[in-house]
Image (spheres, rainbow, N blue to C red):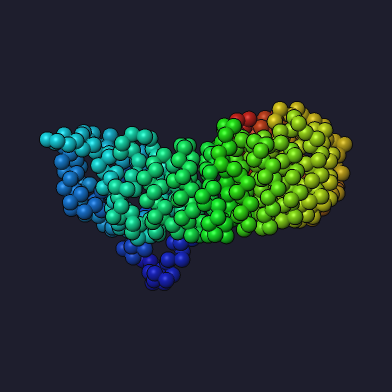
Length: 507
């Protein structure tokens, strides 16, 4: 029998909120008793379509109105159990709607039920398209808590995307509540109606694959409190939007990703208007034309905390200029650059000289400049997390001459160190670094490639002596035996092993 205290909503609700992402546990809670079932259902059904689950389609079809169910009866062999009344109105609980996975789930469900097209006198009904349209209308009208809406086009065929203009009556009520919107610029009608009603966004992710910057600009300009903007493929021309006060004051984070073309799109110099920007990230953004970069690197962001260039190849001069202008406020810095052009020392020197408040640093280090890392260790006293990554096409190089001495320079707050560059060092050098010179109680360590059983034994000694190391990550360390890793688990709580392809290996 369940204790009375766990039957009270004010007691049970905070507990369920703590496990709201644990689907398996929530599912078990549904079967304790009626009270638990009633209180658990809203958590379990807030975001059910984050992955394809055709089994959920029957449940949502049950939540449709009588008129919609009558339309579905036109399909031969439509399952009668899907037309019954549901235990709860599950649509009311929905917080996040991921249309691509809903689309895949409905298509799979229709195939599993062997549903065929209905051919009338002057019209044709397609099972998947009909069910999707009915569900979308019902979601938008009934899901009072819907705040996350993801409706990128699945394809360009009719019926394979959400057309907001056709859903205008329910969209007008639903869109003002949306706080996170994910879409693309392939459907101008969607951007048009979103510009009118979907104006309270906190986060917007938009794929700009097509040439309709005018609609994108209008949509972005309509936002009242947008804080995070992620743009894929191409930065739009925002010339009509840059003077809009709300956007210039509210925007905190800009992410540009997956531009594989020479065309950068609109000018990045408009960033200078976003004076409250805290995060600027380039991820797989390969376009840095000189005429645009000159304006970007001179932009000063008084509140910039995070700057990232991931899977990019900007010129070192570009990075150096941005660090010189904005380095004093940076707390997190993730960099990649074209090391073939470089005097890399100048990048490291720029970091050491201008970024005193860094707490997180992830940079590539080539062999000839490994010893120059000492400038960063001496200057960045607040550093907590350091990842030394490898430069592309860089060869293995020996660091026995400098690794032990680096232990003396490690900032006192550093608790995580990843050496993912192709460094070669003996177990004795590692012992000198960790056991003799380094006074930190490191919690997390990571190593790459040139790591052996003897190195692992040194790590075990360190873990047993300091009693602080809880996580060890080994990447492409193929000479480390399975037996030694099992033995090391006695001293280290978590050991994560990845092969040369970056896939995790089960231990």
